[in-house]
Image 1 (cartoon, helix red, strand yellow):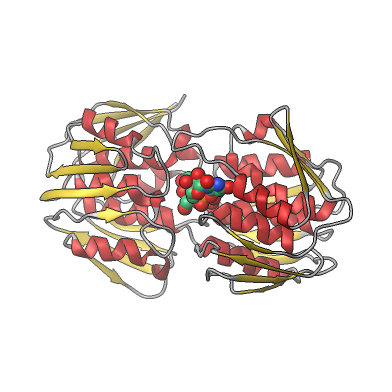
Image 2 (tube, protein in one colour):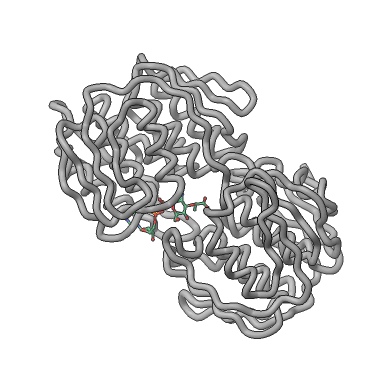
Length: 417
Ligand code: EPZ
């Protein structure tokens, strides 16, 4: 298994690019299953989760051609409606094919994702929503079967709690359903809005994406389309924090500042300077940081996918900060590894109390999930001596060649094969 070796202490300087959003590319690839015509998606990040989704589409019978950052999916002849355990167990977002297959094929068989390092993460709301749209749901042998031989019909559905992929899954199911669907308490994440933009280009009728109420008029069929995926706000946010934590000056290019407002606000409150330079570029520089509390929330609140990275930053800030995680029940695995590096953190259920600044020292640490591994990379960039991060396959799931990007702005980082 690959590892990263990082020598800390170098302020990062220069320009660092943002890639396409993994969490927008995944539902966009699944949406290709809804049409009998080819769809071309651009700015698709070359990360492991995308490779898994491409493998899944091929196993369903779709043709997938990859040229540079563009992926062309031709799903005219699907030969299966099953998402096998072997693929779903490596990436729970595979459950995003449930809605499109049920809508297009009238049948979907998808392995249940099972538990995850950051929480139980059930898909009960995806299933109750599909039932509302007329699917018969059965669970056996670790698989979910959704049957709608006569096709799905429109419905009024309120999510018990906000779910990003739940909203995306039901939106994709509803675009081919008979009649109107209204989704209430829907997720407002930019990735949801981006998916609606793609579906609209394919001929879907959607209103209100990006708000809590999404209205969808079903259509008989969808056409092909071409679409460029939005920038990855979590990757861009990770780089902003990298600039702040190392006390350098970094310009993050190709991002959407509007999607990062909650983080920008916290960085400014902590004493960092964050400025918009030109279009789609943010410059960050920081002297002494001060402790600022944060609570994760659904968009437009502070993203849970930036919580671990922010905690690493707070280990270097003057004072006591409270980090509260409201989305996932077990998303503090990184804290234990940060403590191994010398951080002063006390865990109390869904709250972490961070006292800083702590002098971090290099150590051997283990990544437990995608964003936790990003947090360890950030901590290693300021630690004295060398840190070796094990299981970086986690980071490869969602960051494209992060070691190359960071090395270009001065980081002493290398991959140990
Ligand atoms: C998406 O996951 C993202 N993944 C996650 O990013 C992100 O952390 C999460 O949204 C929250 O922003 C993708 O987009 C592929 P949820 P998702 O359904 O949709 C509970 C990363 O690092 N819930 O919004 O799976 C659930 O357990 C990943 O890139 C139910 O109870 O998250 C959680 O506590 C990690 N029943 C909460 O809702 C359901 O049916 C929010 O989860 C669905 C969700």
